Picture 1 (cartoon, rainbow, N blue to C red):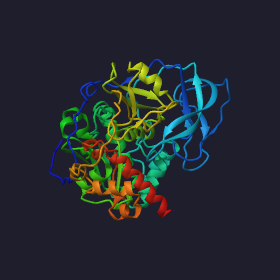
Picture 2 (cartoon, rainbow, N blue to C red; picture 1 turned 120 degrees about the vertical axis):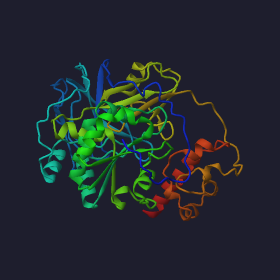
Picture 3 (cartoon, one colour; picture 1 turned 30 degrees about the vertical axis):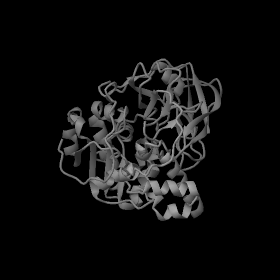
Picture 4 (tube, one colour; picture 1 turned 180 degrees about the horizontal axis):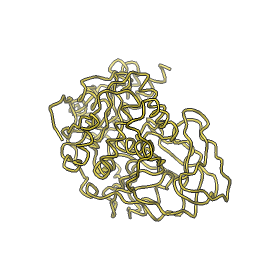
Length: 439
């Protein structure tokens, strides 16, 4: 794997890796579940309509709900089991907070099998681009990142935007998280083929697989197929938050996202290893995605692991399986930008990490001492200290003039602040107020 010179960005910090416990831990299926509650609204829009009844036995991958709109997807049973009821679960809402989703509860579950090689049943390499798009739509796939969307809609949006560059982001440069790393290390050929399929479907002519330069020896299996499909495999230096979409695009393409814009507006689409892997296994082999790899780690986890977990598994059950301390602070997502868990949360395609951290000791913030660390380390180049003044004085218009919307919410400002001010949360609230005034 090559390591050519690319651009960089001002600011950013070196975070402790904290990955030793799971970086070499193979993916293993969870096997002690008594029930799962399968969300009917994995995409934040109208929920799918259930087509099963209580007491009915369903097979793995059997359709249990039909999409109510083009933005939603059909729902399939992650495991064979019995429909025991209908309920409500909690899923992350973007950009912050939580949302409720109707769900189908399954009990008397079959066991979950590990990821095994599959035989290709569809010649995706010979198929035309239109056939690939139709095939993706048939699978009711969703993206495996935080901004969950129907994959067919994401592909269509990228195609309409005349995207010329597709980036698979496997930087994963936040502490503890190793889910995408393990997918690429163990199933590298399948990830690369999925990336090639997505590039064909959206019409991208430049394809980039971006990885941490410290992990390249683990990805040797992906090198030859990457060359075969015209994929540039690029190893980048570790510097947080290079894995943030705006920063990665800037480094690899030198294109800058305007505040409030998404990547498609600069001709770039960004995906991840889990989405590529699921795409290949459905398009080429006909396997519907019903589970995902989740890193379960943190200082308070006694059994850190990269788990293959079915959609709808209770987060509480997963922490019990990993022997997390009962008094821990449970975090959904990364240590820098994740959110504190709420009761009723289940695993969805967006769940890449579950962390059990040491309980937070109450610390009252003090006055800003004008050290400038927040602004010096801000990768978006924002005057965070001035933004904090605008927050305290309620000056939304002034914050807008100072480019508050350019904030990528990486959490560095809060992390380095010696006064312990919740700076990222304050800028986020300013952004929300700006959006509300503009709507």
